[in-house]
Figure 1 (spheres, rainbow, N blue to C red):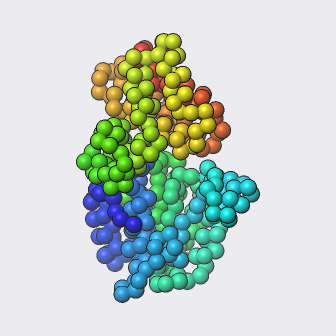
Figure 2: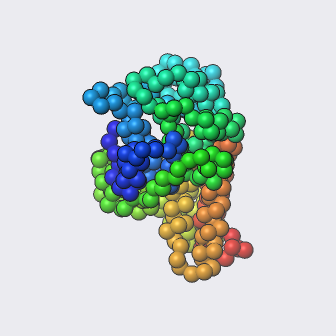
Figure 3: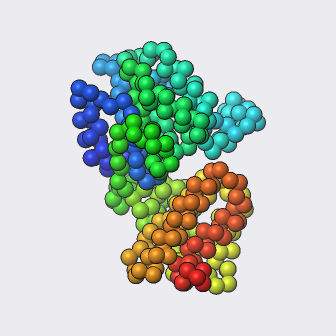
Length: 319
């Protein structure tokens, strides 16, 4: 695993902590979705568990790096996983995953003196799972460290936040995002990269989703909605058609993230427009939070996104 570009300040703070006499046991990696916090967590975990002179397994295979997952949705999906097929995962991290980790924490680390638990993202913890995690944060076993990746720290329990040292991550520069695209999506041409970088607003993950999910046509429709409005619902219908009748959750989430970027890019025009943009952004964030929980009709999701974007081009009352 290679590091993403950027985040020099975060690395400096992390390395200073490792070299100190008292390393804090729990860290919260905070920043926008898709900027590399999860990659950072895995690289940082590998540094923590490394033993001088010893060859280390990969992060995903390391017995002393524990990463609770989103398990299969049901028995049928679990069977697909057993057969090595693609499978649908649950929208949240259940308490059983945390209990499995806690059972492992009753034993000594396997290869060295340290063990790391990565929650990625911790935002997805079920309520009972979060309460169970809190007990481990309050009384961590010796040599155990926790790395909580979070896009929305306000969703975590205040008692969890209070026990973590916060490490903040800023968006990358356009040049850094373009570098990621060149390395990880070499099939994308210059025009696709330029559109992805502009839409991503410093998030290489969002830029990659833009390219891999082929969001160029959606982006063009969103820009037109935000600029011209949609008095006759034609653009909203086109947006729904472009999103597709049966998009997976990843495509729907990428679409909402892209809409948020379009709204944010329009800030700074005038007070009335900014007020509408802030309101629309808030509704998009709310929709993003509801998407993993509710089984929304994709067409209605597209129409709601389109309506929020169209509201930027007209008075809020008309929208």
